[in-house]
Image (tube, rainbow, N blue to C red):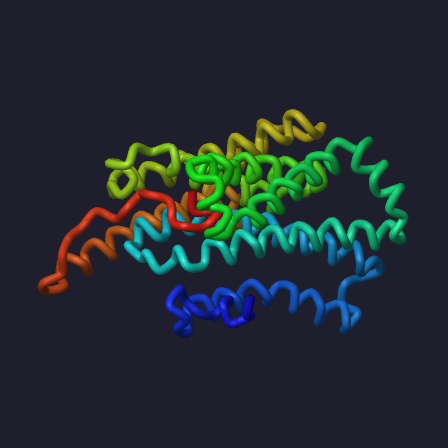
Length: 296
């Protein structure tokens, strides 16, 4: 297979969208490599690299899941072109995360295997990696044809893997769970939107309502984590999420709520522009999965 497929569409033409997304997927790895080369990763550079790879695994997983709503709400079917690329990127960063963990353990592979077996958060992470690799390996058109309807059922497991990836993220973050809470909040919005009936998936009032619902879910997740996993006062954490104070910075729940409102506004803007275009046919965006692994 030629590398050109990475920046060409199905007709073999250059795709600026695919090329741009490809560069975007490589940028975090390049940034980490430059920081490592410049000795800017602190006293444990390999550990910093594995944390960075893990963080970007979760981020790319959320971006992958966001392709479907973006494609439908913004009426941009071309986004289906990059869903597979983003899913494979997620698996690649997850594999790099595990590989860097092995390097951090001086490549003592038997020790690494024993740690995965005996440490719950590592077992969760390894199970998630295995699932992501399976989805990446079966993301091709050939596998879609071979598995038939079972392919869609298999690739819907991406939502379960999103939950387990976040659980692993929380477990290894311990008390510093800001990024984990933020990603969990975005995941909450994605799951809520995915659960909507097709007739409501593009309804502006429903989209606007999802924003505070996802924000409340984010606040609840953060408070629940502190209640279950730490000795910190979860009541104060929950109260902090209910008070909008720019002096202390925005809580993850606020960012999630603002992002949700932004989605509703962008959808409204797209609908308004469509109405102003002369001769544009109005059609309901398709809700069927695109022909790629994480669009299901």
